[in-house]
Figure 1 (spheres, rainbow, N blue to C red):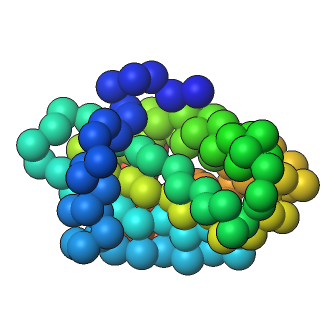
Figure 2: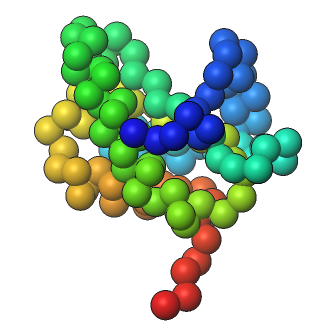
Figure 3: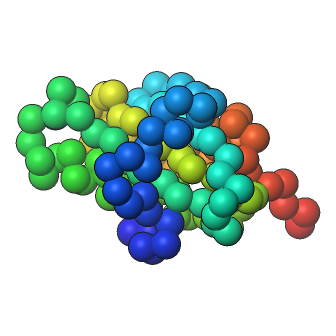
Length: 119
């Protein structure tokens, strides 16, 4: 799970991302990203509708898996961004963790928000 400082708070905090954000779509979920210069670090929210899966247990499992995938790449996130991940496929439950982390990294790279590491 990601730390509290990286989570959205309040009902209207997602509105800016939905209106001004750039969308990168994948096979299982889409990522909407908007820069936020009023913050020092990134914030992330995962949205899973009841249309995706009726069970709250399954929706929360999807949410936790995506938060963990974002946490694994948090050292590479360059700058303060607001990130909203919207799940639209229940196939995410059966996806291996390594593949899921790779998809998150691929979408964040496509959006241009991961810093290039020199090794």
